[in-house]
Image 1 (cartoon, rainbow, N blue to C red):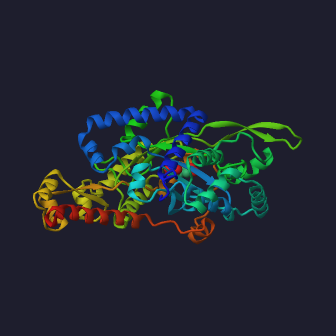
Image 2 (image 1 turned 120 degrees about the horizontal axis):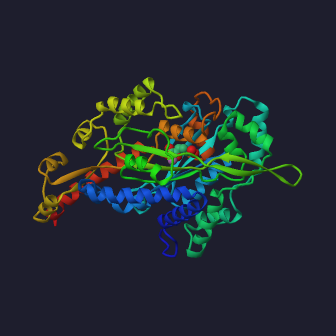
Image 3 (image 1 turned 90 degrees about the vertical axis):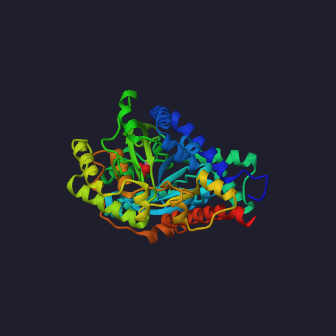
Length: 467
Ligand code: OOG
Ligand code: NI
């Protein structure tokens, strides 16, 4: 921000994240309990694992842990998605990645709005997994038209949110008062509305096609459906949830527990059944209920290269070809055992992950490297400096999502009988047309960061020499 009168975009994002967290804790008290549990487990883990504490220190990770959260919303129309992109941009959140969920039978495709560069991620990494409903996958033409008409009538943004968004675009930012007004106005879009905008019969018809369609179409806005704190030990949190009165889903999504965490592991607690008032068409309401909102935790590990990711996808597919986790948890142990056995084939130390080009790393000078640089600088390539103990490498944290895991989270929270599902049909072009932009390529972002860290590291090693 060139104008010192503007609030920094990362500050806007941090304030938005904090405001959302406060709102969600009020709306879903179990989420507050989960955040406390995660805080306790993280503190214990940092206390007992000095190597992890050191690694986080070296990559500016410690300060990030408590602030780390993601959330998710589901949108109904292209216009909603395009405007959401402009709103998030004001807070420094930009679309990264394309996720097709139809491959898992769920009628949405999605992107993640998140900060892009390391400084913004370090300042506040908040991101929102944002899905767009695929009404084009609904076979019943009448119901599709009806759902489209209902969605066309709603406007999910307040007039203030739109006005301040345009002002920020025009002027390059928002001053203090406008920033506060903007956050408050945007928060309205994510609020839960217990009064449905369709009658109960319509809700039921949408629900019968797919529960997710009812969730998106029947309400006035895209209520935030979960927030997710980041934990350093997901298995410990999963095990401790019942002690605090929370029932976790049966299996942790993603890779198994490893010495060197990769990508993303996630688990959630079941969505709450909430009272809903359906208009009865005569000015009154009839009572009903809807399950929408839940809590989730995540543990993040190393971002994988395309080669590493292909290996991950292959192993996961092999696991699932043998055992598909049942929603009722009846084969959870068999699934977890199988996962561990098959993933024994994925190298589990940083040196091998790096040597085989499976993960991205951040390079920095060690204390010895700093000392050598101060004493006149050192020459040599990155490999040589690593061998001499002057440079260390730490995994770059994965900042994105995983489609198979996301499908598991969707499914466990839509419950059994979510609907017959849809047939696979990725459509990135349609998504980009709706969004009004092409999402950034996550692999390119990690590769750039790795290359920049090597450049900076070599510059720092040589700095004193040229001085
Ligand atoms: C989104 C589910 C995906 C994740 O963490 O993978 C997700 C949703 O239920 O709307 O949040
Ligand atoms: Ni999530």
